[in-house]
Image (tube, rainbow, N blue to C red):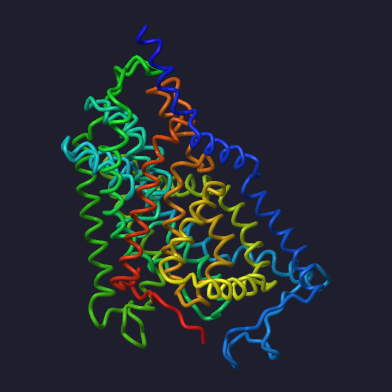
Length: 531
């Protein structure tokens, strides 16, 4: 009697009003076409909208001072129509260069080449297992969340390796495996933007931010490192918040695990410990990383370092920071190859080439997405829509008095909401940056600060949206431990993380920027003055 009634009782929460709301969001999200199709439609929409706006002579007063670069003689910003012969000529002539010149494309591909060597040699997987398996029972939750956060340096590795690993770890410790899965998922995806190191997402977002900022200031440069201080500190904040939610909210709600709920026999659900050879490989890879770090330090730490700024001698604006993607490549590639050489997964240059080739072949969808995203960004820039929206939006914000912390809290919430339907960080930022970066710059905030706020909103709702590309995979792993688990159960399990992260992370941003006035990254400005 008890066992037959229990599942029905457990399924009741899926029918709550809030869960129905989330199901409605999922249904609406599923109505959207593929992100690539979406960008193609956006391109068409921009062309038509520019034609209509150009016909009616839509314009706003240019807030930049006289003589500023790009300011029209009449002091107005006009919407430029692309829905005519001149527009078609411009599109045809620049279609290829829009794609090849798109800032995030090359930087992401180069960074991924280095990460690929470390991943395919087995170094990242072994390091992750060593980190998680080496934790005490008391610290295991903190370590799982922390490992999830730093795993996003290696792109999808956290989803594929760490999330299933954490569920197995909790099960082997006699804890609820779904609590382990939730903790890892919260770290990997909910804390997506936080990290101790610069990852592939940093150059990707900074390239889009720079393009958007140049609508207001054509010479404005945004490097991959501009959010590093804030994201470094955020790693520890998200780790603490994630562990707290797991142990105080999620695990008590899940209760004691019943192995009969599993969809398969979990008797063999044991973690593979790191072998002596793998330990040796990690030690040698660690030494290689130290050597690489020492050599890089010699180029930037001394006052006469060869990669400091050639004119000012400072780190800000130096070739070192401008070439940070090359160092990400080296920092992963060399230790990765050393590890592979020691354990035997990489014997020669052909193995290295194969690893990089496999990584590039998996980037096919991203490259296609970038082609259409690049066209949209270029079209949006050419039409001046971004500047017109920015000036009109800035005037509106000033007229209602929404500035400072309240403005950024609203911006973070809006980004989190958009993320429910457009899960890709690059896709969402490519659409919203051309509007909000210029708008908030005109209100007085620097692009680096705006990007940091965006990254909070973009991260915190990843774990509750089916639009996130790995959500289906996480659901599949979860059903291994609870065969009747539905989408509502997974979303309701992850929702406490999302709520705590958005409140806690936003509060941290407020204290960081508005109370203590700390820059969000090296050389990053907090405020921007037009002109």
